[in-house]
Image (cartoon, rainbow, N blue to C red; front, side):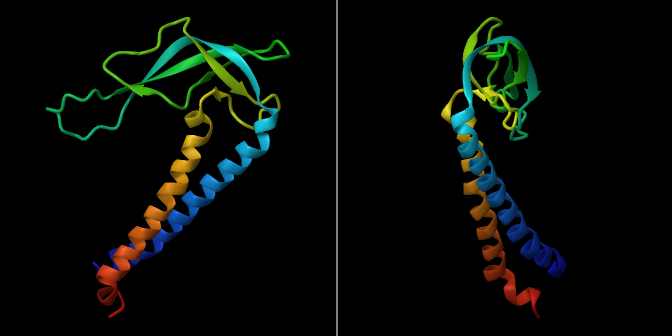
Length: 153
């Protein structure tokens, strides 16, 4: 037990710092490249189905399939590109139909991956990292203040 708690006191702060730095790095890269991003319209050419995280309760009526659109768009230079959206929806059936269009942002220098033009798709994951990092740090503090005497005896 002592070794597990000691490992948690090391892993939680390190994990928290890594997640915070990852969020800051993503925000910085997106902020710096934002003026160079180009807007276009992408068309759904396929839909990828992935198993979503579920509670493990088989009797739950929640769907456990996530749908991610695969979009095709044309750049200013005339190049046709495809990408799978990083954001999807958990539903019983796909909310996306072939031919559906979405606004797309892409980086002509390919420093950032193409994304659907929405606030969450562009900034959301970075802010989630910035919120999750302190939770890891708080977990380490909780372990220390709850079990600290046992670890260092």
